[in-house]
Amino acid sequence: MINFLFPGDFAGLQAGLLGEMKHSVEATTSMTLCVFRRSALFELFQHHPERAYDLTWIAAVEEHFLGETIASLGQRDARQRIAWALVRIYERLKAVGMEVKNAVPLPYRQQDLADALGLSLVHTNKMLKTLRDAKLAEWQDGMLKIKNIPALAEIALIEDPAPDIRPLI
Image (tube, rainbow, N blue to C red; front, top):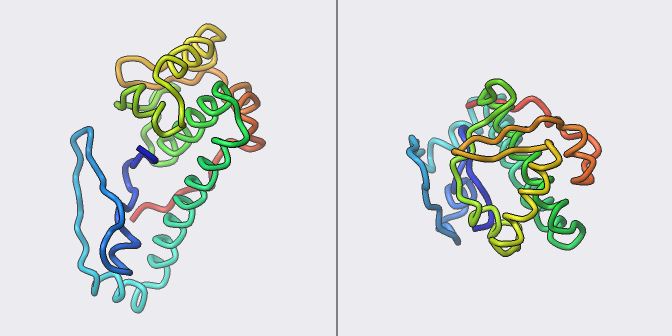
């Protein structure tokens, strides 16, 4: 597990443009998958530059998120990594309108988060408990509730937790 896909994300964009995917994708929740013909992607870039820009923006944000993940592995301790992931995931879901009453759906397993952050399940569980006990973040029953984004972002070493407004395609 190296990443999470959320509503509106594109999976396999590079493969759609360059050929075969070099990784697999597994759905852990129900989802709707839209498949695009490779020629349709090229047509999008030719005839709808504003949508092509949106698609490029989404791909760039995804690459940036992966880069931040890699940097987190070397620069943040376990508590900071988990705080970083929760803030970034929360903000990504909020950006697509998934936030309700300071909570977003997060139907993954703690093991998935642990794997993505290079941590053991036991250590991940302990760090989530420290964040819960500090009344900063609570993840249970498939919902993530963050009670104090600025404080959690400070632990995560994030200067500005709010992402740019995300285009929807």
